[in-house]
Image (cartoon, rainbow, N blue to C red):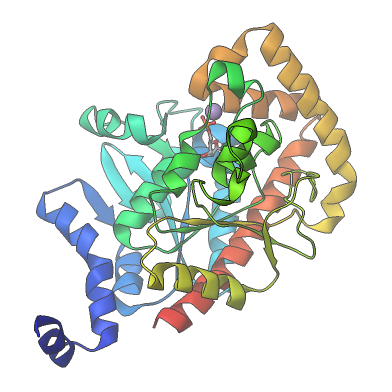
Length: 357
Ligand code: PSU
Ligand code: MN
């Protein structure tokens, strides 16, 4: 009865937009320190496509000023698809959903202002209370995108299970966050510094690791995150190269189908996210194997120097070392793959907005 009268008052569309707004307005009601860029606010209120972008790649993933140029170019690419970019970060202890130019510059210029921290879920509250600047990882970008009602997020590489993760227990909080946040994450797979097989097992086939204890192996119990290769084949991409040798359970190759997967997933009330893995553009494939050799060397060095025990410093150290070993070639590939996921993310957000209305 109550539901019927609700239907009478609100159209389905208005109900959906009310629901979208609710967690953000509830957080604002609790006076949480969140600023939404006016352009993003307008897009969210009127159902226009929005793409969330992370900022650890700006503060800790690339050297300045390349980091700034990459961030600006990625925003331009998102715009070229008809979507609105929302780069997410923490500035002076306030969460920013969409950055003004000066904020983006302040965040990127870690040479004159080397204060920004790398923010995962565990760091958010302390960094805000201490009024820090921070780059959001995939994990914290997922949290804030979900809070704002942004449905698509584009980045380079998702975190995952580190090499030797079975001993160090270093598993990025990015993975678990995908089980909590209803956001479609578009990436070039996971960074090749990681253990891709175990990362996929963790996301999709958790029980496969314990096969001897289970007769029905990985079909029953999983973290339940849909992993979809956005490509010609099922191959799960390996960041600098399009193929890791491991397969995703699903494959598609167009934004409309990606949007339909997301829409169906949430229509059914499933509240987790999904991962669309987009291979690096084919012209970068040739340098991919040389880069992978540098990755292997950097990982070996990190083990010899006990860097692999340093928690959140491991990823920036490895990315920087791979950059040194390849004289910047890894940086060019990294930019190309991020720009490519921004393009695909923008296209998916446009299609999603059409379906979800
Ligand atoms: N991929 C990149 N550069 C980066 C990262 C990924 O090319 O800087 C960042 C992302 O923000 C990702 C994070 O969420 O590294 C994972 O770090 P950790 O393993 O500490 O969770
Ligand atoms: Mn890590």
